[in-house]
Amino acid sequence: MRHIILGALAALVLGAVQASAETCGGIYKIKRGDTLSGIADRQYKDARKWSAIYNANVERIGESPNGVNAGMKLSLPCINGLPTGLEGGEEIANVTLVAPAVTKVVKEARVQRGQALRVRLLTAGDYAPFTDKNALNGGLITEIVDAAMTSAAGKEGYDIHWVNDWAAHLDPLLTYSMLDMGFPWFQPDCKQNPDRYRCANFHFSEPMFEMLILLFTDRNRPLNFTQVSDIEGKTLCRPKGYFTHDLDKNGRNWVRDNKITLETPVAVADCFEMLTEGKVDAVALNEFTGRKAVKDLELSNRADIVQSRPLSIEGLHVLVHKTHPDAEQMLSTINDGLGKIKSNGVYQRIIDKHMSIIWSDL
Image (spheres, rainbow, N blue to C red):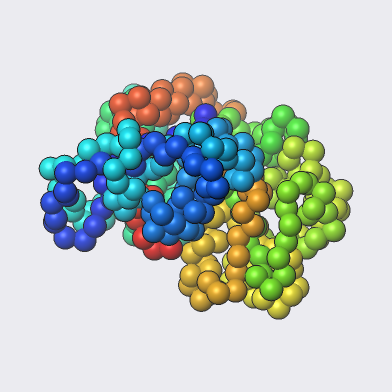
């Protein structure tokens, strides 16, 4: 289910300040000549936020961000208190904006075998902005999972455990039910590849969050990407250990049929170094990791994002091993909780809050 980010609470800012009587977020009606980057520049004072607008309206716009027409109405999310004054925005008058305290999410397991079912959720750090002990409430996905489980099972119905060895999560920790469910994980194209390891062995929740996977290119060597064949014969870079299923999904089969060359160095920084050295045509990453790397590596004047279309849109899920005796019950619990926090507005408030923090660092 595609998440639609509507204007909600204003962004968090340092210190306690009183917001003026105005609205944040809302509906924008496309005018002749409008582009997403132009709208972002006017409404957010930051043209880069075209992707936030696109991600919030992808079902309406379609697979090409250029597919906007005069008269189309778009939902603009509230990010850092902008945009203001749009129809349908949420009034933020009398709302006090304060800097959040970092909340420790790790809980000690207090339930021994034989007691009532208590779901033991597994995650790891160093995956900002999604899961990170030093981030607000453990990161975007951690807070969503925490809120969903609280809604469905109550605070006493689950624990969240941090094991900072991602390689051990699927096997053995989840495979042998040492812990119950893990997050956040991408789901491969299981319809096309049902025998892939994750598809064959795990059940997936509804997506906790969906994000754009983009192509980052060298401004001196622009790359056209309007159709699948445009990438064939190119060399892409994605760090070792990152998922690659999106490169083969929807009949692309770029990796499977050797239609592209995929470089897999150790680190994200290595990919961007290869890009600036002309060794690869593009770096393929989720937009937050890619944008943060461009900033940290001081490549803002060198790296560009292909805006004609995203490489893919990927969801982050909770998963449980198919052999777990309570797999269906636990999956139903997390999905039920997710549905509840989406209905009561908690989900959207979490999204808006974290998006403001994330974009302020980009």
